[in-house]
Length: 216
Image (cartoon, rainbow, N blue to C red; front, side):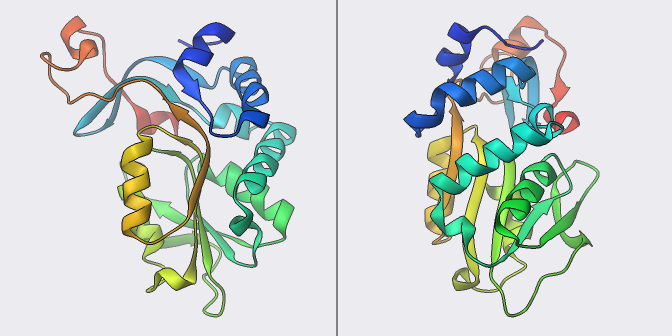
């Protein structure tokens, strides 16, 4: 089910960028980007909501607007680089950033679980340019490790940018541990639960589990 009520969206989503917050919530509400249900993020995490970025990504004008907001929030993302993303909805944002910066985009193949791999599907990694890692929705950041591995040193990675972060403190720790700057436009306020009837409300209520990867 799509969450479109403005009041609920303000309760469920926060942005570190006050000047863009109202517009971002408006875009999310108009496009039905926020889904409510019982989502399996991975084998260890369930969530009551999920952000489906493709609802924005298919709309050229909106994704370009979002990319502009992200560049304003992350000045490092505008430097000459190869933009790297997985073949998920992140492609929409990566290509929009490419249009705005003139930087090329390389897309890494995803595995059967829609997780990034260290194999390129399209594009190439230039040996003389750094990379910028782009995602649409990040939980902890660990799934981005194959993308970071395209360069052997943090000095050759501009940073990580994303539309949304579901577990902001965990991702912040991940980025700091890899000595990388990071930026995102929105963060979730809902809790992420272990998959058990004792701890996950969705499991306890018997709500069918939807693999989040199906929406990315």
